[in-house]
Structure formats: structure tokens, C-alpha cells
Length: 581
Image 1: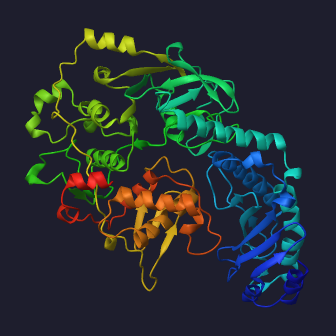
Image 2: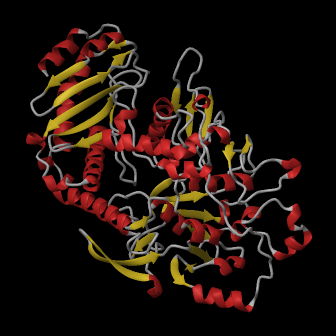
Image 3: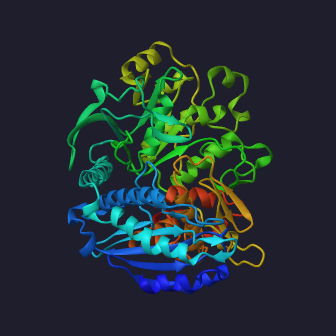
């Protein structure tokens, strides 16, 4: 530490690039500081540093990180505490980003992050520092105060067990473990989702994911017909609503909580921090939200189960377009999700293409089937479950024809759920739909696709790899912009940053023109699980958060240069590929 202070005093007043001289590692009384990257300009991306605290000093009990879920809970708590401590102590110390000291703060979801890592040997935090400057001159003495005086205070208040709140640590680790345990047991319980009684599902707004507060918030209370009790490692016996596999409808009047329930289910693929309200609103990990997405590009997707007999003989077994319609985009989104192994589709009629969802009797009479390329979702949803084991949870408020194909109907009345299956079936029996089914005998196989590695080109100008992330929903990949604004299960910019890096990682290591996309993504995630998220980074100190293969797949599929190899390049037969997958 004294050596670092002396260096900073020595370069005081010199040009900003003099800060490069401080790169390296420095031993403090209770931790080691690693200066991995030093910015070249006060207005550039901040410098990247790490602190490593040995467990002999940090002293976290082994049970606080005894398994993966508990460790992620602990790391999220420590990251949040570090963020608050750094924000409290940081101050403006010159031009540009001078004085900044910040860590990749978590949101409502508890995701694994490169920002914090706890092991039996150490606690390590990775963070950004804006080294102070006056114009482009080093403020070395202020930098010394930041790193040698302020930083030890942050470390001691945020990273040592004795300085933290043991009750909060217990809450974070217990909530994370219970949610992960419950999600892993859903199949054993015969469920695709579970919502605990007392859960708070509404959010403050579309841009504020914190729980809604106030007198009008209605905690979740399970209908008696759907109530069951589960035993969790920490919370013990918990009652709530179990949603079984099959076709589930969520019905009710406008503004009564239908979409709020579906939004909670789509977020249920992640663990949530204590106080979020959705800690035990849990969904199977393979749940994917499906919507129409006008204008997206589609590359070589077999959408023939839903769309066929297009004008001019256009092939829908290998459908490609640079500007998909609502119906073709929704068909492609479903088939791409199935290709990657989705077992639960979440659909809200508000964001679906109407002509994709249903064609009523009157329209069938006006436009004959041979003139209509679309086989509506209502005629495929049961085949998906019966042939491929893929369940669907569907918000529907405008078509009672779906009563005929439903296994379960949940009615929302002023945010309170009711079990309405029997009533819906009685109505369906008394008032027959009279619409004709527009369906072939089977749904058909889910065809794998082989991406052409040459079509993922991150080069731009003189840079061999030019990849940037602009917020949660935009990736610049070479000369192409990937729009992820319709991908609602992408919840954190650090996820997007990791996905962008994973695309290049997949291209360099596993895209060889012989492997199907699903296998490529599985190989990438296996590497991440074994080596950690940092394996994706091309430089130290990049803020990454854990992601699913479904969101990685959506990014690859929305790259407008993506090309799919022709079928005769795949293998001797489609069946052989499916066995290999």
C-alpha cells in the first residue's frame, strides 16, 4: 500500500497516461489490490480493479456458500453492500469519470456475476475506478486518497463477515437455496410452476421492477383446488398454487392481473432477492416467453407446422426473411425455442399476432383453408404437449374457443386467482365453437439447424473483433446491430454483455459447420459452468452476469447476417442429427 501511495504522489501533475505505471498488485493490511487495467483518458471507460480478501480475514461461515445457490445469494448480498458503500464514499474528484468507484450492482434477480466471487480461500470483488484528473493531468494525491484511504474503508464495511448483518446474509442465502431447490423439484412434483401464498406479483411500473406497495396490493392466495404444500430446506412447509403440465389458460377482465401473473411466471426462471415479493414464484428453467416480433430477421427456420402453402411456392421448411410479419415471427420464435429445448411456452395475447392465435368459424367460411397459409396456434397447442411434452401457459381474454383445448383455466378477479376449469368446460360443451380444426395429424419433428460460422463476422473496419453492448437490448456485432428489445427474459445489461462475448466464443471454438446450434450453445454453457463467466472475456474486469441458452440463442438468431447451411451439409439424415443432439 505504501508503495502504491508513493507511486501516485510521484506522478502527481503528469500526463494522464502516467497512471499506467501503477498496474500490478499491492498488499494491504486485510486484502490485496489488483490493478488490472488503467484507462488512458479521464473520459474513457474507467479503470478496472479487484480486491481479494483471504477467508482467514473475511471469515464467512462455510454454510453461507455451501452450495451453488447459497453462494450466489451471498455474492449478491455482498455486491449490493459494496455498491452502497462505494456510492456513499465516492465523490467527484476532477474531470470526466474522476472519483468514480462502482461495482456491477444487482437488480431484483440474483444472478451469478463476475463482480463478486466467494470461495473457501477468498472473497474477491471486481469494480470500476475513475482515476482522478484535472483536465488530462494526474491528480495523484487524490488517487492515493481514493485507493489507500477510501478503498480499505469500503472493503472493511462490505466484505468482512464481522461488519455485515448476519441475519441479512442468512435471508439471502436461504431464499436463493429455497427457490433453486423448488425449481429443481417442479418436475418431481408434477408441476411447471409454483407461486407461494403471500407472494407480491405486481411491479411498480414497466421500467421499475421493484414490488408495488400500498393499500391496493393484493398478496397471492391460492385457489383451494390448486393449493398444495411443499417442503423447503429453509422456509419449511410452504403453501401455494401449483400449475401442472399441459395447456393452462389465464383469463379475466382487463386490468385484473392476467399479464401480471404471466410476467411473474416468465421471471420465475430466476431467483429473486429477499423483499422482491416473487421469491417463491418459480418456473421451470426451460420456460420461454413467446411473442410476435414484426420486422425481425429469420434464418432457415422450419415454420411449416404453423405456416405452409405460401404464395409463389415459397418454402417454409427452411424459411428465411429479413422482415418477418407478426405471424411468421411468432412461428419462428416458437420453433427456435423448441429447437433449444423449451418445455414451457408463455404467451400473452396482447403481444401475439391475432391471425396466428386463432381463425374463427366465420373467417373460415369466408376464406377457405386452401387460401390460408397459417395453421393457428389453437390447433397445434395440444399436439405440442402430447407429442413433444411442451406445455403452454396462455393469457387469453378474447377467445373462448381455447376452452376446448385447455387442461386448466385460472381466472383473475381483482388480482385474486380462481379455478374456473369446470365452468369453462361447461360453457364449451353448451356452446360449441363450430370452427373446423385446421391441423395435420401430427406436429412433426423439431429440426436442428447448423449455423454457418462464416456468417458470424465481428470484424468492422480494421478491427478483427468489434463487439459492443448498448444497454440491455442492443448488441453491436461487427457491422450489424442485434435488437433484443422483444426478449423480455433478458433482465440485466451484464447478461447482454456476456451473451455478446459468448457469441464470439461460440464462433471461435464450436461453430464448425457440423454442429447444430443447440449443441453449440450447450458446449458454451458447459465451459462457463466449469470455468466461470470470465472464460468469455478477452480482457480482465469485464462485468458479466449469468444467462440462459435461450437468450443466447435469441441473439444468434437475430443476427441479420446469420446463414444456415443447407440440409445436405447437415448429416446423412435428419434422424441421425436428432440422435446426436
